[in-house]
Amino acid sequence: MHNQKKYYKADFQLSVRRPFALMYSTGLPKRPSPLPDIHYDFHLGILLEGKSRTVYSGFSQVNLPGNVWWTSYWEPHTGPILEDNTALLLITISPESLGNIDTFGEFSWQTPFLSPPQKRPQLKTADERQTVMDFASELINLKSAKPGHWRLSVWLKIHQLIMFLCRNWQPEREKNASPEIDEFSRILPAIELVRGNLCRPVDVPEAAAACGYSRSRFCKLFQEIMNESFGKFALRARLSGAARELVSTLKPVKNIGPDWGFADNPHFTHAFKKFFGCSPSEFRLQGKVSDEK
Image (cartoon, rainbow, N blue to C red; front, side):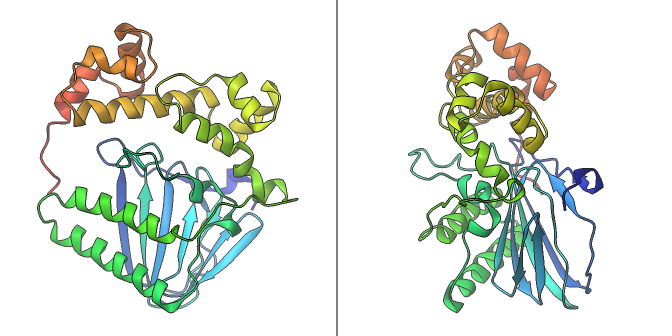
């Protein structure tokens, strides 16, 4: 799995207003060679029945009921189904929105997704796997029944699930790993730098230094791994934070841009409109919508 041109690039249409998607599939037939794919958003998968395999570049794992798998930004992967009548829950998560409930900044929400595949959190006991199955059942039931504020309930439940999976886990860098296996951890310091400094622009030299690369080497590596430039990634993160504040607070629009590192309101409005296709004020008005039916 090395030539990304062979992969299907999936687009799950996530946004500030739709930070997650749940896909519950049952009765899946045995499928030994599905089409590999890559996508910008994070995935957290849970096997509910049957047997499957998750295949990354240089690593694979077999999944039994209650097992989970994590997929990162633009990470080539595929998921063979090894038994008929397999069931799974796939949770797709917007990277920019993940962790936006954590006002204390106590948890590094992206780190488990960005760690090398074989170093991501996994379950060790039957009790742990049953707890994850219970989480999955609650998520499926919330989406099916759609009680009041169901989207908020699902969003909180997703964060609780990630915290449960990581409660005894510490990130570990892979020593002497091949570039294919360790590629995401090579730029992880730059991503964490952006996530920890959303109130200001992080420039390329600072990000490159955090990763221990020259500017040119860092830019090339980041583009290869993320399929977008570091500048675009960093700007997207700040604009997404500003968009969340627009729809979740009553703060005047003119005061929001400076909170996210924009020098003045015209600069903020221009960047926002270019990215979201509307002005910050229009985005706020569009956000005054009821829960999905």
